[in-house]
Length: 67
Image (cartoon, rainbow, N blue to C red; front, side):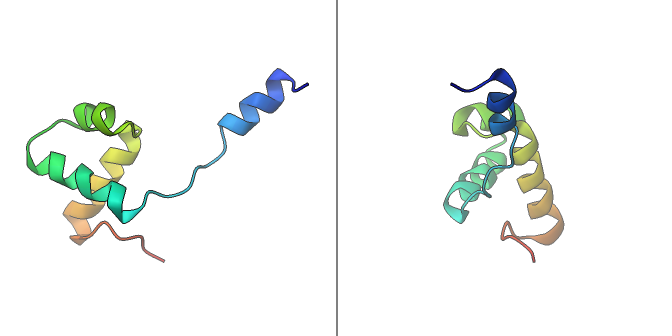
């Protein structure tokens, strides 16, 4: 039986990065003038992640992960 603290720790860990396949639609929806909130709800991705992808794309012109 797991305790409540174990469950919280499991949920708060970092997840894996999004694949190119999942980052592409974020930019597509952004170019179609969808809000960050709408994109987040449509793709079931956190708003902070959507915002980060869009910011990186605007600054670097790419959504590829950087070393």
